[in-house]
Length: 508
Image 1 (cartoon, rainbow, N blue to C red):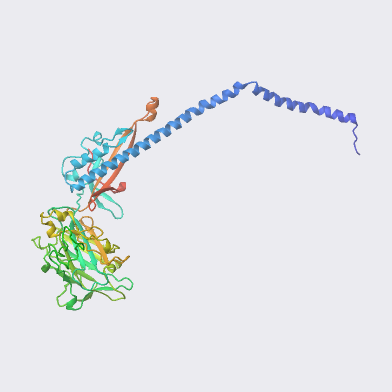
Image 2 (cartoon, rainbow, N blue to C red):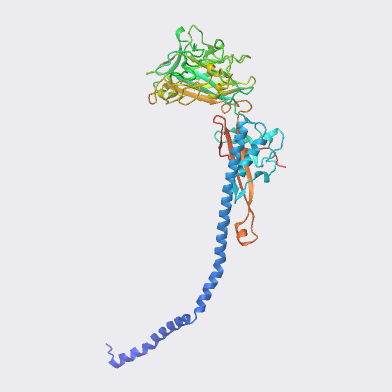
């Protein structure tokens, strides 16, 4: 049944609901009025939050300041130690080792030129003796943890290894080898060269000398080279240009009115050609006499390995010492297709082994020829003279023509490339730094000079300085490692892992 309300009844219902609605509205207004009428309550909450968070913010800010200050201090300490290590190893290497007193002082002087927070980094303030004990053992290191530790690189493959008790040595110089022929190595008597170039003059006593050099050709694609000694006309020959001012010499000027003369230096110097022997069928490169001597009759056939053996006479004018050189020729044929000249010696990466001795111990250097891309039109028309040539018995050094420079690389005793063609200069080169290759080498161990600089430094707290709070000081620690490059006579930084640093000197 449908319910019908009258107008009065509807009005009565509307009035009955009104109080509830008004009650809600009034409650909301009462809360609003409460907060509006009590502003101190809001300020109190904010003050509480400020009291809680301001110290946190200040602490974080102070922490950032301290970390930044310590980071900067460590960077500055590292720079100071790098300067010390580089300067110390440079001084030590230039003097070819020995007493470390001066190198340590030089290293400290360079460290002191650096600052941490404006204060000079004086390593002697940490150790007045700069870790030197004054004895002769272990490169005069007093402690493996000292500020300056001197030693040698005893291994660099695959990682550097340092030993503070190993005695380093640079050796005596660089051995340069070249093969120079434009189209074919057809047996001319001066297409192959060997030059032993000293680092300094006079040459130190006991320098290593060359006993044997072994060449090994390789097959690469269509290149199948062989040393050919099948006839008497193809046997190896020593260059006949054995005096200066010889127009047939390999290293000579091409200009006119040159101060060092218009003709070249002798292809052979300091070695007795009559005592040189060539060998084939070589099975042990550095065993003297190993293999079969190549007879003058030229019946030795074709081979991939050729050894040339030099005398070890007591007379230094006969043996292969630093400052000596030789050029020779040997016929090479290609069993494949195409010609085989100086470029191809490097293209097939011909292996060369140099055997040295100091009269007691033997040392070996092994490497490969590299095809070069110099240009004959870049050669010096008037030759320069290497420093060890200028200082030999002046004023007749020029007449002796030791170490003439005509090659674009400015390497003495290397002839001008036969051609200016791109990637076709007719020349390949190989070189060894005596003392950095093979077992030992260079007298002593032949290992590179190296120095570690290490220190811990107290850094004042920046918060303490600003606020006076009893904080700090803090300690930062760093180290730097440097070695000496004997070839360039320059120091360089290198990375040494912690487990590759060896020093048995116990700290007191």
